[in-house]
Image (tube, rainbow, N blue to C red; front, top):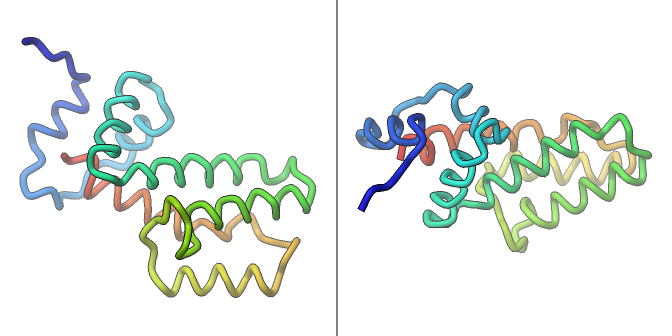
Length: 141
């Protein structure tokens, strides 16, 4: 049986060691942006097998929300934020991501205080946390 695997996926798997090495964020970013669709499919398949696909979906949705932020009306921004919060951040969400309690409390505080005036930076810490997790825990494997 022959298995064809993209070089970047193979090299990260072949040198994973204990799984805690810091990997180049540019490599992960290229994978997540889908520059090589096959590589992205392999990575998503791995995340599904590891039960961490929510990290990719959150990263994708949060970055898309940030990208579209200036083109949306205030109500659309808030609706998009609520979708992301309810889907990934709320403790009862179906695709709950692992973020710090402090980050969770900060997002809840800003949501309550600012309502429709949610800043485009509100998810930045969570995006960074999820990206770091994928670069350290998922990409090396």
